Image (cartoon, rainbow, N blue to C red):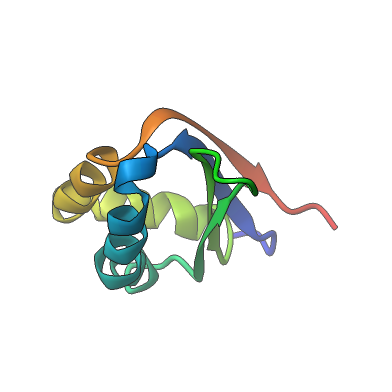
Length: 100
């Protein structure tokens, strides 16, 4: 087990006509699911100026916790992942480990 915080960062778009519903759904369903399954922080950012570009940052205690959470949530997380995918397009993601 390490003592480095781990993060998954997603970059994606949400069409303007779906943004309000996406944010509401995230607050009510997506964020609470992940934060009750090992994610210490789940934050959504949007570029300024009404762009469709968003960033999602999921923080975990350490890389082991992140991997355990993502693997153990499998079938239970499937509806939440599908819900997110019903809004998000052009999704890219990377995993990062805090070094300092």
